[in-house]
Image 1 (cartoon, one colour):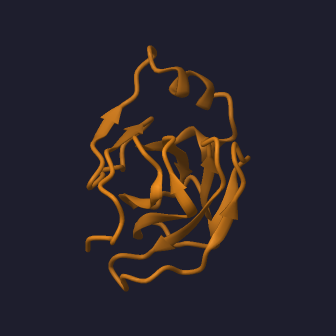
Image 2 (cartoon, helix red, strand yellow):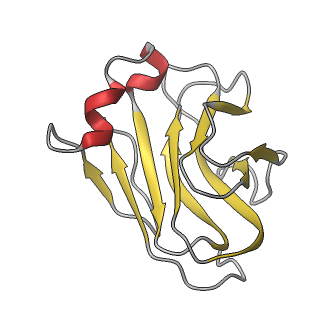
Image 3 (cartoon, one colour):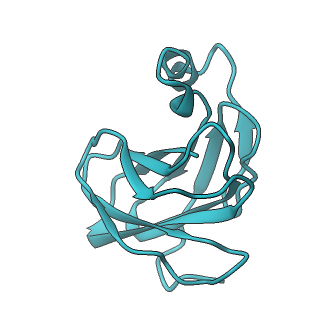
Length: 143
């Protein structure tokens, strides 16, 4: 499904397995990746995270697909961008619609965007910005 937004360049960095991203490209993070270095010290749920990066935030974007794991009960997102955004989860095996929109302030902490999600569920994370953003949209996903 193509979104009616400006073309975005997206890449995803995965600290562990489970993230094959379209339009993003999944890459395993190594010790040279600064974002991977700090994630191991966080709680078990955040030990497996994916990073989505959109060169220009535009009106938003979409990251994934991802598959939930037994590490987290919820799907969590942390906005590492210089601007606020909203995020929702699309359970792609069931629907192409968002569950609900959750506001993520600029440089936010971890925020739950879907609760009590079963293991092994395929999903995408969709972002929506109020204004066109020229800065990169960067987010981390724990699932």
